[in-house]
Image (cartoon, rainbow, N blue to C red; front, side):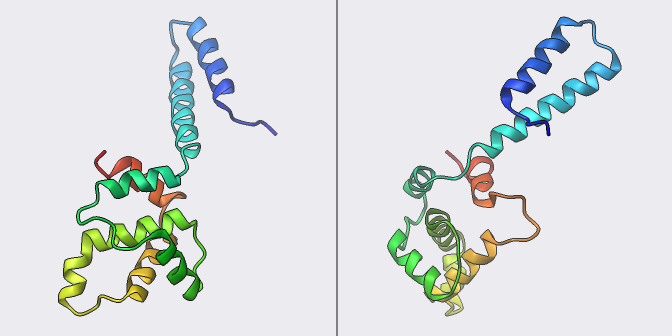
Length: 140
């Protein structure tokens, strides 16, 4: 089995560069290698507790719940997620949609927990949804 690493990709890129000018086939290979390197870099950037804390610093309004509180409601509802991801998801959703759910008297921790679970457990999303959202959508 061939393991794809940054080192393997860099070796292939160097090999391609040594055989310039490029043929169409080499340009296709270069494109594939660049995509592989980009995807590999994304996989190694899993969402961390440090990312969560950095995101929380810029939430408006600021986080409503502590990580202990969101972990407790997660356990009470039988959800299984990384605590920093669940904490971030609950607070992000409140930050983005709190006014609307409060307006319609739907402001219960169980609702926010269910929405956070739905966000994190989205079958249509790529892996590491919260990390991708942090890296690609959130201003920082």
